[in-house]
Image (cartoon, rainbow, N blue to C red; front, side, top):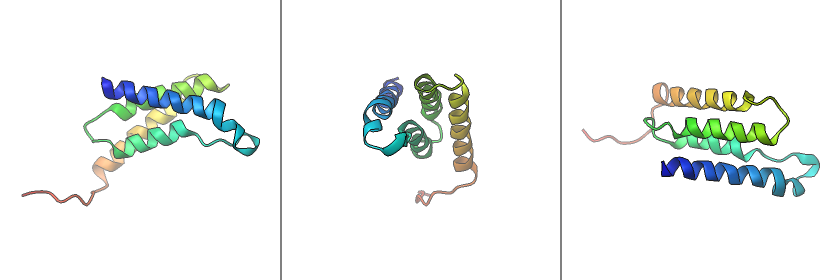
Length: 102
């Protein structure tokens, strides 16, 4: 529960930074999307038994939809499908070079 609250707070801070502070530093409004970057990194680096990236992708997509003028529900679906795809690929097709004990 503390992990999810921390992820939600981090995503909210990234949304506020992206929409209010970083707009002034990048020309013509081309601001990097910190929420998508955070969700992708969370999906790649979390344990395979954890589902925090899926909850983070839903919340992060909701934040992107709230702060943009798009259809609500598009970004949570995109980020959730991306997170599921990354988890499936990492579980089934990628073998990490971690030494295992016999």
